[in-house]
Every structure is written in structure tokens, then in C-alpha cells.
Length: 296
Image (tube, rainbow, N blue to C red; front, side):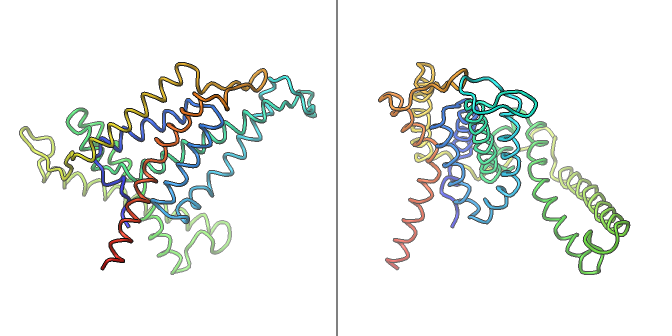
């Protein structure tokens, strides 16, 4: 089933992702990090399923473990000393907790960008910024479109080479290098040919000519306006709470922050509502679809 949040107007999708990504980057409070990470993973599962999230986590987890291990080795601030490293530097509880928080922050931001690339397609980006910054929007949309297209073509070429025994896993080391160079050569040729075809297609469609119009299937509806109002209300409330110190959390020189404060709890609830908007819409649409199937 198609994702419900993806069907909303591109301006709604763009404002939402910009807000949650910025909040995830600047809010180091552990509760906010947990909410953002949980919401990003849940929405990624709604978009791509467990297999898609498993594929991204396969490359993300080693990097996060590396960050978690390196942070305490180079950050020695903190009052709670747990042990001393072999080279004499102290290992503190605060540095370990901060490393966990930094790893969660990176994971949440990467997962939100993963969801962003799935929802904000190239046509949506061009629709939003095509008239404001036409050249930059075209370059960015082509770049974002090229990466998944290159991956798909790479799999096709590799499978074809594997069928004739020329994969990078066959033969001696020199033969594997030759097979790898062959695959790279095929991909470079394909990329250049694809660029020429794209250029000819754009020229044939009159790109860059004065008076050229653009067709769009997007229409700002009443539901888009209501959702945008809700998003702005939540953003304003969260930003106000952040300015007033409702989500402050200190890691150095000792761990200190507001978690059980009543005002802070309301900010967490608002932040949770903001982050879980796409998941809520997806679940609601899925239930509505099942009810319609039962009626039929």
C-alpha cells in the first residue's frame, strides 16, 4: 500500500523533513534523541519494510559502534572516572553517555535522510525549487535520481558478468581485479551514454527556452493546509520550549538535565507528535483500507 504522508503536497513533506532533521541535529536531550530515532526507524519500516531498514542498518551500525568506541577515547571530560586507559587518560561515565547520545543522533539523522530520499522524489524537488533556483534544483534532482539508478544498473551488470563467470568473486586475485575493472568500465560507459540521452531528451523538450511551461500534478488541498497548520503549531511550541530551556541537558562536567519536569514532559509529547505524524497517517490509512476491504 502507498504511504499516506507521501501523497501530501511537496511543501508539506519538505517543511516536515527540514524541521525533524534540524531538531534531531540540535537536540541532544536523551528523550528527544530516543523519540527521533524510534520515529525515523518506524517510518522507514512503513516505507521500505523491515528488509529496507535492515539493509541501511547493515552499514549504519558498524559506523555507530565506531563512533561509540572512539568518543570516550578522545573525550576525557567528566567528573565520574570509571577507569584509566592504557596510555593514562581517564575513561569517564559522562564521555560514554555522550558517545551513546552522539551515536543516536547520527543514526536518527541518517534514518530521516533515508526517509527523505524515499518521499521527496526528484519531481517534487523540481516542483518546489524549479522556478526559484532552476539550475541548482535540476542538478540536485538529477544527482538524487542518479544514485539509485546507478545502483540498480550496477546490480544488472554484475549479475550479467556473474552468469559468464566474470564476477569479482571468481578466479585469482589478478582475475578478480580484471573482472572488477571490466564492471567499472561498463558502468562508466553506461553513465556517459545515459548523460547524453538525458541531454538530448531535455533539448528536444525545449529546456531553457523562454516561455516554456511546466506540467505539475500537485495541488494544495484542504487536508494539506490542516496538516501544515498542525506542523507549524508543534514546531513553534517545541522551539519556544527549547528557548526557555525545557529540553536542555548537560553531559559535562556532570550529567544534569530536566526529565521529569511537567513543562518538559509537554515538550516531549509535542515532539513525539511531530516525529510520529507520518507513521500515524500511514497506520490510519492502512486501517481505513482494511475496513473498506471488509465491507466489500
